[in-house]
Image (cartoon, rainbow, N blue to C red; front, top):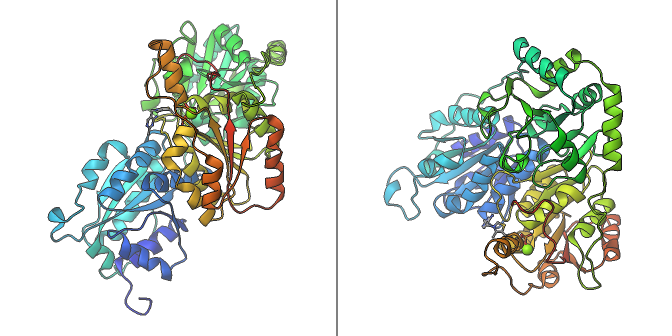
Length: 544
Ligand SMILES: Cc1ncc(C[n+]2csc(CCOP(=O)(O)OP(=O)(O)O)c2C)c(N)n1
Ligand SMILES: [Mg+2]
């Protein structure tokens, strides 16, 4: 191949390299075979998962880790339908991924075995869909795909028929579209209104969300909080915006709320939501902030009032807006001291005592203990279900760590492949994946991916032998359980069968295995089958 004239596939691979991507996630099939054959001749590494949902979610974890666009390739038909849950999950959480769909050749397309109208199918689950019909339009198609993935921060589907992959490469050199990063300045009238509300506040609070993280507003938020005398609560997505050891950091707010926030957020009369969408999880389904004035800051006008109308919406970059407000509000050092004291003296969430026995570990104790054993800059991925709530409160984060949760789609099977993708993106950092046992049973084959690719992810299975959150809900709502409990699989034997390290954990000291693992320069995953106390519902339950 390398001596013949470059093909459309060669051009596509050069183009994604020019966009700064050297890793291509996905799974091979007939549709993308030509594209992947060309990988031999390019500096692009093909990183294959074992199920398309997982392969897309690996790209998701990689994109979040590198804070760039990830690229993934799927084969037509079942490759795309399998991948669709990963695509939808990334779409809801605004993760930029370019998905290259290898389609059948143009002739006979609609009668081909695995025909699917991918762009129509992908409409509701992706930010943008396009089809490249001729080799001449490859440059424009790829350029637009990356641009839309970046500007809309979401997955973009690009259908590339087999004959376009195999046809002659276009002559023109590929040039990525470049847009300078612009910081959107908040309008001064709205700033003045916000200052008026804040000056009248007795108990202001700050709520930092994922938008604050994307804008790198952490330090400015800390300065703002010190001046205003306000606690800094975060959403799940905002967890790593500020270090939780800061004296004004009060931890996660909303459904999984810390005791400090339970007090401070309920008392708040003015809440500054910075890059937070105020979803049901953040407001405890409208229960929090019902009587407070809410100032919602977001770069995206459409995000303002999506879930509930704020008292005042400000369209602006999080960092710019917070800096402007800091300049304009009066200092309240006494209040800052009082808030810090309230945070320091709030009961620790685990003060009530664990329910661990010799045979089963309380998931709160397990998470706290594991959190203590991994470095501050660890990347943590979180599953969906009852287990979601434990890392939210008990795995301490800093502004150097990352915590990835599929907060807006709640996909089972998200955290393992996301962790694998994160490890590909950050080979030198420790990556911890929290997963439910039920979710792991949906993506078990990806342990093979971790072993094959040499990814030493710590897979912490909060094994309650059930679809825990469903079971808790059934007991609460129906007073009985249906199809939600089962005998445990032997995850240790299964993991070892794939070539991973594994251990059962029933007591905290058995987590010594993590220290040994981290000291051993590992190159395969470690699976911790934590036999947890099934009756412990996640913090803040109910609501779900
Ligand atoms: C793909 C998918 N299927 C079904 C659900 C519905 N669901 C949400 S959580 C859950 C139970 C998850 O069980 P497990 O992974 O063991 O977590 P636990 O709640 O026990 O911590 C189910 C079935 C979902 N969110 N995603
Ligand atoms: Mg479970």
